[in-house]
Image 1 (cartoon, rainbow, N blue to C red):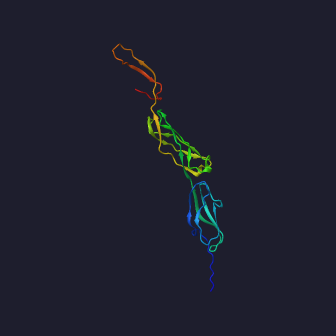
Image 2 (cartoon, one colour):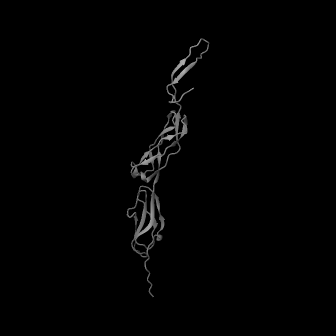
Amino acid sequence: VTLTVKKRDLAAADFFNIGRSEVYNGLAQAFTYTPPLGAGTITLMYDGEPTVPTDVDTYAVTANVTAGTVYNEATGISLGNFTITPKPVSIIGIQTSGGFYSGSTYVGVAAEGLDGLEAGDVGKVGLWTNVGTTADANAGENKLVTVGTCTISGERAFNYTLIQPTGVTVTIKPRPLTINSATVENKEYDGTTTATVTDVTFATLVTGESLE
């Protein structure tokens, strides 16, 4: 009696422990899997190209396999998608323009740069900060600032996602006042040091505001 055992055709279900997602790290990152025992040499293709991807994107992965001890040669086995997701980066060195009371709730916001960029992307991703606002315009210490949406741009920015700043504060100092002019009414001697002052105007009042 003679038994002939034929090689079987390879299918996507024969690949195990598939890794479908990685976070961008500036290096080439491959689709991971456990190869079928008895398969030949496996070559993965990403959107039809053999180059292992580096940048953020979703890639259609197929496998080309040479004949092995158990499986026949196969071409174009679809293994699904492999995604490289953006790396989160944060803003460092946030500074707010405090100063003296101005009657406005707007606060200028600046920053030193970004934390978390891969070495090869430094200088290729720019940060754009936005203005912030406080709940009111009054003077006060460590007032919470709500910063408008900050953005990143540049040729490598698509590989990152920006963590928006929180917990930003500003100190607004009371505005110094100087008297511009005043009228002192004459009076008869009454033994006191008091005098009546009227028509006081201030040189440093915020426009549109007045003091009683």
